[in-house]
Image (cartoon, rainbow, N blue to C red; front, side, top):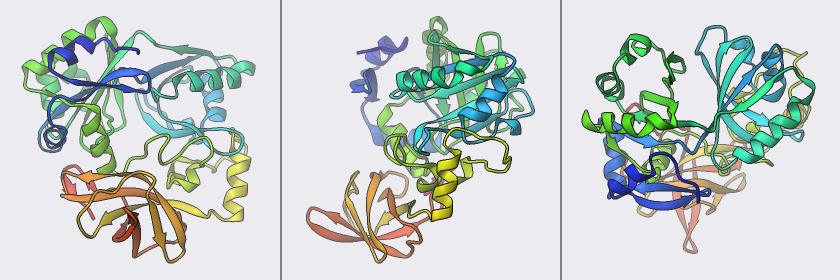
Length: 358
């Protein structure tokens, strides 16, 4: 299994190490629930070095990205501005979801998922063949996500010079400081930073953050936090066969420029014109129990399926994202242990910035 530069730090902190897409990563450091509350109420940090940073450089970098992804990088005008998008195949299915950062017209940075890295890079290289662009995976970068209402204050205390360059950063923007790339982004529904840095600096930076009181959190809490925040997980809410239109990600697709023929556009337009049959909604269980992935969802418009289910530590209830027939509202039933249990249908997010919204 692959290990991140912070592997030893996780072992030293009694991290429970598990196989996560071929990477040996910490599931938790004792209590997943405590780590979840730590991020919602204060600040926690995650090793996300298993994710891959890819740089795009060259005269046609922008032109290439306008074809490669469904959202339009032409929206990015200022250095460090970020955009969330899906990268599609010809049938409109999602190859991966990603964030792309604008550095200048000939220089962009993208962050892709760990489990899809090899597939993504092969796909990108194939698409790039007719463009004047250099695709450069930055495999020597580590990444630390510091998240929570007190995340920014703690990062500024731990890392000299960061406040000067990142103190005024708005959400979904990034700044450079030497070898550091500091983005005000995250996957928890809380404020904070995702910091890309050279592998050799990762352990020192992790220790500096520990010293100012930032607690390490594992992948278990990262998943319950992102689910409460209503954020999609690749392989669950969408995949190679499911389009953004069927995953409640229509907002990440830009069809405004009719001349921009991005990969998968024709398939999406056909799906839109034929009528999208399914979408993603939120579910909150009425009674006790935990909703699990792949459980059957019964609605008045037909059956659906749970794509991500968990117990919400913030709400004290079972919640889920589910793929159901388009237009489903009100309530539904979930098949749990051969019994049907009622649940309320809601519009995610469930929780954002510490507040319960449903």
